[in-house]
Length: 131
Image (cartoon, rainbow, N blue to C red):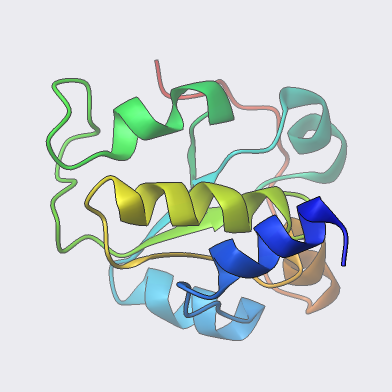
């Protein structure tokens, strides 16, 4: 196993990863869907309606429950579902959020592309990230 495969497996061992359908239900129940994909991907492929765009370089500051720069309403009980293109970098990001005090952080298996392939709603993308 390569070092990145081992690293990814370690990150995923702490996550209760969700399918697109489970993510949609969790979002309907109040979970925060966090899109960390680059602008170019969001502009080309669209976004999940109601998701919050937080670029990866800002994610920890915006979602750590004790950060002075966290998004309004983020607490240690927040369920956050991190979304990337295909579900790889989102696994690493969600594991980071767990280490920062967000135990209900997870990611979307297969990423945005699995969401779209499942026929779930997509809106035109390219929106600006949360400042």
